Image (cartoon, rainbow, N blue to C red; front, side):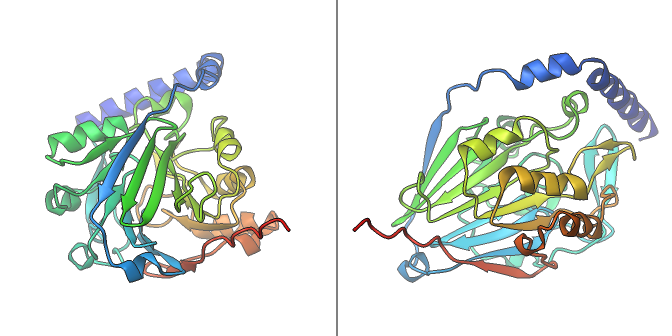
Length: 326
């Protein structure tokens, strides 16, 4: 294990050197033309009409980046992580991290899940328990890289998205569009050694261009130039779920947003409401929620933030339809 840790340290140090030495190349890569987006479809069996007709939705914070979203008859699980306090997850290159909390719900107590949104393949987002016990027919939306790993694990319904690709979901009368949006797990040089990350925009409703509700999930990203394109393409975000924690690999390399980054992200994507998640569950998380709260207060954004403890639920309502012209 010590050898793997050493090799991982050398690789990450080399990558950090690349990110410092080659900013021009990184900038050019970020300004590359956006490729043509692909669209995929997923048709789910019809569910309970009463649930589909409900006038409110809920988002329950389970822990880490794991949330349970229920709206318009759809039940969505994000980044499923159900190992317990004291257990370790692998982060690659021989590096591990110990969980500091317990999930608010046990895996076997989950309701039936329509689909999983997986921002990237790291054990603190898709742990060994989930890998072993999640139904192999559960649809999983993730990156192309993660989908290859899911294929090896035997998962049958994989939707591999690159930036701006879309998945059109239908369940009875319910409609949802999931769009993959940019995310980068660290500085330009370091990120090449870490899994590809997918942010996502969820547009609920029959007309995705004028959605009933629009949700943004950041994934494990830092703030960088491509994030601005999310706000340009998807204005009017109703709710943003931001992966914070200021995660540091080897105690040095920041690979998720800290408190200051979280506020900057809010200022860029301009959500009506923000819920911080992924902030206190592992020992590699170095930026506590209090740091984000302090930055939010200093920026005068308090009214736009909803703080949830593990297990808490945020209830939301759809946008009001515009009044027809006289």
